[in-house]
Image (cartoon, rainbow, N blue to C red; front, side, top):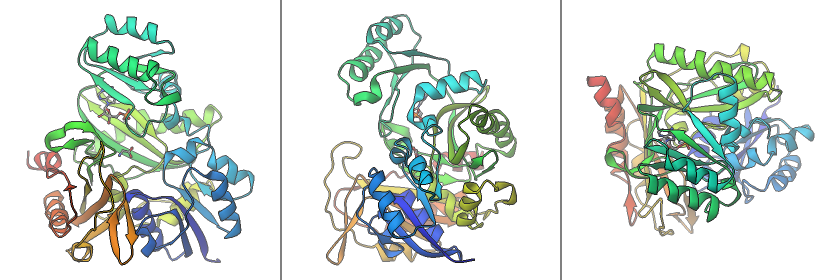
Length: 429
Ligand code: AMP
Ligand code: GLY
């Protein structure tokens, strides 16, 4: 078989981990990334095209005779990049615009889950702020208020009082802090439990489930402070025992893949189920329709199977031929971010110690918001690096990843010191 030219879209830690994994495939000849970052540039030829510029990306893919395009972030998926590429006969790994509604519209998802009897929090949908405001007057608290559309992970507000809920409704529906993403809201029951991320690669009808991971959404240790894109992750997730995984498969993944196919929106690509493991079983908090960030940085180092083969099989509707093999070791990813994130932060800070960090045992440094400035690598975003390491068990993986973190310096650098602590407690319990 002729070797492949691959285009990867995105610029985060997730995409660096994908580039790292794609590069290991003997099937691959050339790897391009748009737009990429300083770390990805060592593995791929980067092109300055934004991930949202789906027509620019199509032109590039045609020009370079790309055999397979892999989409990292959600925005181009929700904008219909897969439909656009497929109409032109190009192979692309990701869901159609219709299937990407599972991430793009929380209203679509809640209605789908309800119709298909898939467990999720009880909810109500509002398209008028007046109705939402009268509902929150008599609701039970805590109450969760969500903007319907994409809001870069910021559209979910956990409200502990009537006043907080009223403020949330006003901000989303009247002040339009998330623009059109807030035309409708979902008000839903607060769920208690441990969160887990379970990702499945799907071909429209069949799927293979990846090793489970857990994210750390809050900015500060002990899960305090505002939500972020994710401050660290580990895999495997001790909370997802093999019995729990069977339940998640039977109650969530299988009926979702089957339901989407029945509804005429067969799901191809990565179905990411964000779950709350409650005392009455796993419930869906949200779906994403792409690889998670930072979960991917903790999952892919454990995947022994050639990811390119799996993604090709998904695009060609032959996932039944694939079985995934996993490294039994644990993997931990610690996100190093710019001080101030998820609020305002400065960029352009010189990063030192990258090579020392990567030379630590079983460590990998995945770049997120970085760029080259002359000979230096400098910060260029909120989440800057995903410092990742394998270990024999979670304790070892935590030790190895923090040993690598200690080698890295940049001004106003911030990271959580308790990534993996919850898993460790569970293992020792
Ligand atoms: P989402 O973007 O819907 O996953 O929400 C972001 C985060 O908000 C989740 O990872 C949870 O930590 C939290 N969250 C969302 N929905 C609920 C809920 N119904 N109950 C409790 N926490 C929630
Ligand atoms: N880690 C959460 C996400 O990828 O959306």
